[in-house]
Image (cartoon, rainbow over all chains, first blue to last red; front, side):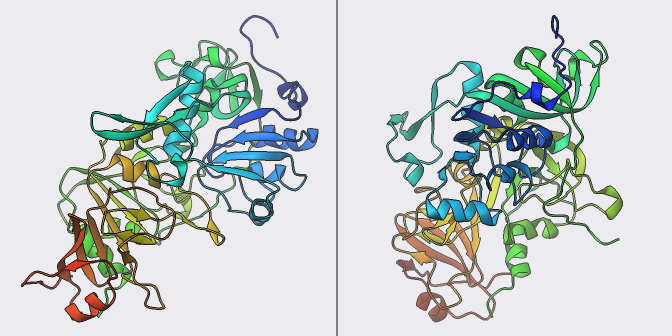
Length: 233
Length: 218
């Protein structure tokens, strides 16, 4: 690599430095917009004891669900889980620690983490199990709880297009948590469908500037659909 | 007769107004989209990052990058916009969504709602529900009035872990339209052919019954 060129050519290189017990932030909503190849690489590396922050945890044998059979995830911070049997089994048996977090709070925790804001007050979760153990404050007559930001040793992100400098464009609802995740990793690795030369993307249309991106790899995506729903014509 | 799921969605749809931005939860709330009154424009918000959700795609239109919050494949309506999850929840938490419709397991006389967890049984998570109930002023809860075994879901105190505290003012069930104020349920309308006695029998929390309780128009 030289200068601002973020492109790496192997998954080994993309995930180099990931070690046991690290925290990984992952983009994606369900199976939409997930860095498929980077997750597969973590499975291959066999890294253990990971804390993963991601909206969901994949399904059996796909997405982050790939990291479950070998018990690579110690703790998951997510808003909605249990779309897979192995996850449920590990959660119920206590092998996997699950920190259920409201979706908007999780997105904001990643955003804050990347933006240098250590914590923020939100009304979300007041009076619920989410508020337990958290500082509460009344501001202008309404109760709020203090939520701390999330940062990761690694962030793994899926984008649609990138230039070699790591400027990113996302597509449709595959954007979801990816832009926030990209800002919150000490090392942010992005897997994309297409890499172009700097100058080829319109600067007006870049969603995530390359400053947040450390490594970039072109992937091949299966893009599995969880709920294939069609209308009859 | 208790309302069918479709009739329930139809009744909720009568609460829509032209120009509303609306977030519909999973299940019965999703069906509300099928009953938007003719000539009325509403824009559906899907919290995974889409404002202006269209109908389900044809086989040819299916796009794995375009799903709704229930992870179903969808399309975009004319004038749609796409954004990230933090922006999506800024809309929700910031009170910019005009109407939120969501399901629940239990609602109580103090406007508390439990909808995301049954300890030891169902622990899938709250998704965006806690943000939605905390951020919206205009929320309609849709659910069946009682369980299959006849256990009321309209209680004095929720028994399950809460999704939100003191945030629910309107509940539309298969039996009744109920408003919550001053620590009581107030019966506003009843489903066609459903007696007030039936509703009383299946409402565990204190229920105020006015002299006149019209039937719903469905």
